[in-house]
Image 1 (spheres, rainbow, N blue to C red):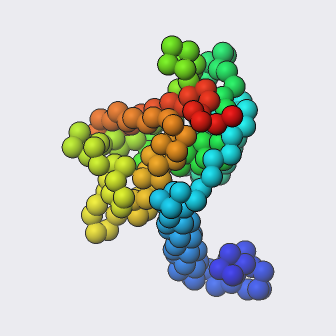
Image 2 (spheres, one colour):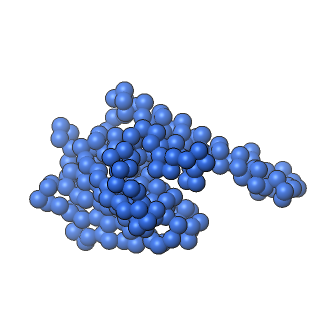
Length: 210
């Protein structure tokens, strides 16, 4: 309803109300994200989130995830830089879960980057039996003591009472759980003021899955 009011569906809208109405919209979106994140964690912990495997074109999957965040890219004036190898093989995994992981990491990269660029890359690692995907930003970065805690529930990089970046600290915890469900790995490298790189590894196929 706030969106309908803002776009004039109900007739004249006093411009003086716009900041307040936009605040209501943001808060509603934050609450929806929180509810969805908590539901995701509950399903994972209860073992009620089945894995649905299919043959996946990794390059196409990355491009679809990037398309999902295109409005955020345009809002901040960013264009993604691509570093995709030409020889990335098909993998057998869960499309929706990998897409959720990528969208979450890309959104985080955008949230914590004010200037510079976001880069996403991928390459085959036959010696390890899988594919590596990385997302690199030139954002605020993290202190070394923060890195061991970033995947903890409710941990926030900006822990001040008035936080600039929003969020409740569930996104990266969900990412780690999803990566584990897909028998993959995630690691992060970061330096304050220089940005962060999140690196994902997914096996060609999941053990125990036909």
